[in-house]
Amino acid sequence: MAEDVYLDYQSAKPVDPRVIEAMLPFLTERFGNPAALHAVGDKAMEALENARRQVAAFLGADPAEIVFTSGATEANNLAILGYASRNRRTGDHVVISEVEHISIHNIAKYLEKDGFTVSKVPPDQYGRIDPAKLRARVRDETLLVSVGWASNEIGTVQPVPEIAEMLRGTGVVLHVDAVAAEGLVPIDVDATPVDLLALSSNDIYGPPGVGALYIRDGVKLAPIAMGGGQERGLRSGTENLPGIVGMGAAAEIASAEMADEAARLASMRDRLIEAVLGTIPDSHLNGHPVTRLPNNAHFRFEGVEGESLLLLMKDAGISVSTGSACSSKTLEPSHTLISCGLLHEEAHGSLEFTFGRFSKPADVDRVMEVLPEVVARLRHMSPLYPSE
Ligand code: PMP
Image 1 (cartoon, helix red, strand yellow):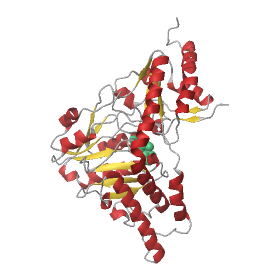
Image 2 (cartoon, helix red, strand yellow):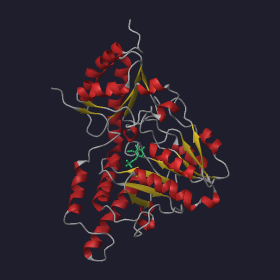
Image 3 (cartoon, rainbow, N blue to C red):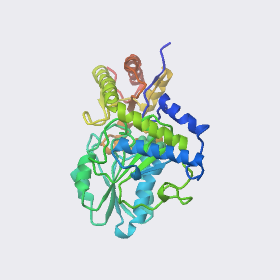
Image 4 (spheres, rainbow, N blue to C red):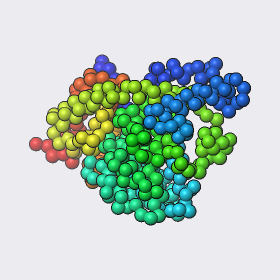
């Protein structure tokens, strides 16, 4: 029996055993509430602030610029809704890219219902946003621009440093959803003048259900949930201390290991891309051929459906994805692939492989034992694929 293979690290990652070790005391003897004034509370506050320092160091930020949240969805909401509502007297226009995560699209929809105008910047065929095209949509009433550091689907990395430089001094705030890129490409808010940046803990092998928002010193937000005033009044609710400690530990490990890990992931990714494109006819790479995440390989196969491929791969013990797990329950094709100019049937014929910390070169071999045969079998049955 072949070993099961997991190549869907984009949708969920196991928590690193070193992170679990760091978290465990905070579920038992170090259970205190950071807001409590006794010694147990003091110890909890110390741990909270230590985690804040670890996450800040991961980004090159000041610890006072980090607010912990329940995840990246909440961080994106706090960033965009919090900034828009606090500053609506100075503008009513927001710019996002068409290839944003579903959470950003749905926040934009909410803003539109609330009287804001939203402009969406289309990408090129590789999913890349041209900074000049984005700049052309910024106008006097623009409050904020939101661009993901990288696509969680097709892996294209955006020119965020150029976009940030371009917006510097314009008074327009730049929010970046960095979830897909964190731990895979260097992110330094000192070198790259973003104003707001969302992180998720699980994407750096920390526990799920925790995230953080970087808020550059001086950027003012309104809270989106009212309560006891924790996290400088921006994110009320008793802090998830074990989760936050885990995120801090995960950030420290990611900072130390990212360079080597990215190179290791990229070599598996490149071998898979070469093998698939070299052995499976009429297969194509989605996303940018060069500026892409080191762990992402995203293909489309003419004449087959991604869902059928996924299920046959599943039968062989290989877990892969047809795209964003956050929108896998809809029958709509991926908005990202459609924005890149793919036809509906092309978008539906796509499959995403994402490598991670526990992937190994043998996983590529196993995929190549199964995938060519599965594609051929489906094509044989497909009215969309001409047989010789
Ligand atoms: N942004 C991106 C790019 C994502 O991939 C995800 C999902 N992991 C989110 C935001 C939402 O994150 P969470 O589920 O932690 O709220």
